[in-house]
Structure formats: C-alpha cells, structure tokens
Length: 428
Image (cartoon, rainbow, N blue to C red; front, side, top):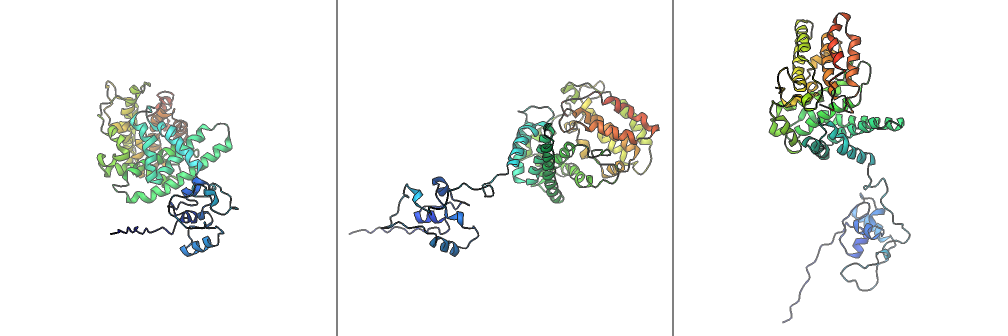
C-alpha cells in the first residue's frame, strides 16, 4: 500500500517586505529596511512604503512596482545567490539616513561616555576607580538611567557641565555645552518633580539618586549672581523654589524607607557605607589634610544663636546642630581618634539635604544670624575646593555674606575667613 505524505501547510506572513515575500524567506520586518535586504544590498520594499500604510495599499504598491517574477515552475528552497537581480534597477541602495530610525544623537553618546569614564567617578571622596562607589557612579547610574530617563537627563547635564569646565579655549563651544547642560537639567528636573510626590518602593532609589544629581548639578552650574548663596539667593528667588524641594527629597526618602529597601539593586554599594561603624577616622586624617580646631568657634557661635531672637529663632539652632556632626566627621574632635559621627556625615552635601524651608526663607530675607551659620558651612565646602564642580563656592559665599553682615557682627566672621586658607583636600 502506498503511503501518501501530505506536507503540513504553513501560514506565511503577509507583512514582510515585497522582496522577502517574493523569495519566500522569512522577513524580520525591520524599518526602514529589513535585515535581509540590508545584508545583500538590494532594494527593500519597505523603503518606499510608509509603515502606516494598510495591507491592501502595500499590495497595490507591490503589484505596480515593475518587479518581474521569475518564469517557470516555482520551487521551495533557499533563495538564489544573485539577490541583486531582485528589485527595481533604478532604485539606488543607500544606508539609512540621519533622520531614520537608526540615527544616533551623537551628543548623548558623548555625554554617556563622559559621565561613565570621568564625571561619575569624580563624585567619590577618594578617587579609587575600583572602589564600590566609583563603580556605582560609572556603571550603575547609567543603567538606572536607562529605566528612569530623568536620572539619565540629570547625569547628562552634569557631564555637559564637566566638559564645559574642561573647555578652556573655545568660548563658543563652552557656551553650547552649558546650554546643553541646562537643557538636560530642565528635562530631568521636570520629570523628577512630577514623580516625587508619588514615590514608592519601585521609584524611591531612582528618585534618591535624582535628588543627589540635582544638588551636584546646581553646584556645578556655579554662582548665578552676586547674591547666590548656593542653597538660595537673597531676595525674591524663584529658581530655588523649583530645585530645593527635590534636594530635600533625599531626607524624605531616607526617612520613609529602610536601608535594605532603599539601598538595594543598583544602589547596593551605598549599603556598605550607611552601615559602616561610626568609629571611622575623620576625613582630615584619612586624606592627610590639616585639622581645624573648630569646636571652640562653633560653641561660641552656638551661644550667640541661642540668645538671638526674631521670627527664625526656633529654626536656627536646628540648622547649626545639623552641621556639627559634619564638622566632627570631617575634622574629628579633640583627643579623639575616631570622629564619633555616622558615615553619612562624611558627605558635606548632607547638610543641604536636611535644611528646613523656614531656614532657607530666612536666608532669602537676609537674616543676619542665619547668614552667619551659612558662613560656617562655607568652611566645610572649602574641603572640596579641588573638585572641579566646587571651585568658586566657598569664597563666593563668604564674600557675599561679608557684604551683608552688619559691622557689630563682623567678629563672628573672623574664624571662617581665616579657615578658608587651610583645610583643603581632594574631596569630601
């Protein structure tokens, strides 16, 4: 008995390009040209057909394309080697143009490389390229940005500021880089501000990093006016009202989520530093910088703050108290080898994250006592003066405050002014 084998019918795609369908091969339907046609450098039916056309209109186009079908019996199998015989002879084969789906934003590629190679690692206290925090900024942050684009925009902004800082010869190019930084900062800031009120377990880590990048971007942009005090500007300050809430978002997020939740996944390297013992040596010892005798001057300032009255009387002591652990972590205490401060206080920017809105408002109004407290913070900023993004800030803040402080209070500025000449380091 003869056994008849029936071939199982195959359902063929009707959405592939005309060339692949005529050759009876599988088409990946890539636009503007499929992979087969690009590989063999032949005209692709997709190149002349908008992707939004209906199936019937594509078929009509193909029937009028002037492509001759091979004569004789059609046989299944591999396509013929000479693919160039297929497709119209008068259509040139070109690579996808700059406006095609394959185009790249070269500036974004440049900023990605800059951030991963140089800008990210520059944010670390000690420039150990193999350390966990350096790896975090160079590898983890760009990957986090692929999922949350506002992180990528803020990273791009900082990288553009870094390139502008390095560009010393071409002023026009530098201005273009600054404009590019402002563009990405604006986009990142808007997206972060929109998401921040609704943060949850899935977004807390990305918003935490976005808040940190917002702070460094503001610093890297440099003083914008004579009255710019970094955390705000004296007078009617519209700008800080948009970005300071995001910086304070660091404090809010830290208080809402435990360490094992916040510092997980891409932020895992932070867990090591947040759980390190408080018996660490102060920054001045670890980085071999001259120690400042800070305790007596700050005690003197503290007594003056406590005796001061005014509408900001309650918030001023809290601002000063938040600064003292950072001094302890940076310069240590007399006759104590360990700083006694938690590791997070090694980061000078920590004070900015914890500032209250009332204290910032008092600075905007030119409150004399609040300005003196900020002058003592400038001494801490001075430990980071060798970082590219921090260069002018300590001297600028002190100079701005000195012009505002009345003559009878100038004596409280003597120690910060003297301290600015010493205590510099590679970062903090």
